[in-house]
Length: 157
Image 1 (tube, rainbow, N blue to C red):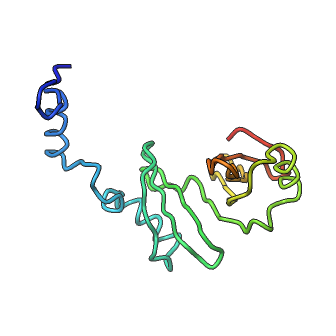
Image 2 (cartoon, rainbow, N blue to C red):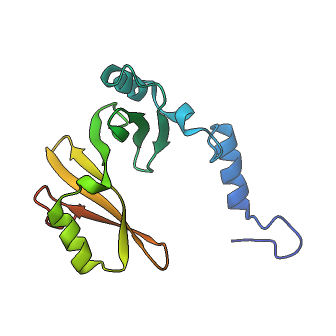
């Protein structure tokens, strides 16, 4: 790249051209994610959850749109593809209700970690239900996510 090493902006001609393209196409990282959610996705969400009005939308980089919201069950997420099809649901569980099998596994294999939160995740297309467990290292505070099947065995997700 032809970066200016002097007192310039430090951008190449390619970077400048890309920035101008983003401006022209009204694409910037500063855009509100909710504003970029396609109407068909929002309509599908409204059809399934007509009483929810506190959702926060994000995009995952794979053209999926995620609505995060709270219900009487607690924190929930719905993942929609760009066609407005619901692909996954996540429901946060109460830590004390995590299965004893998973809790025993964590105590044995992750002694220096504590349970932060867990979700029951349902993948709609392949009818797979799993648990996403988020644990935190007690010393470094680094998070790690683990996946388990319904019987409490670790899985790749």
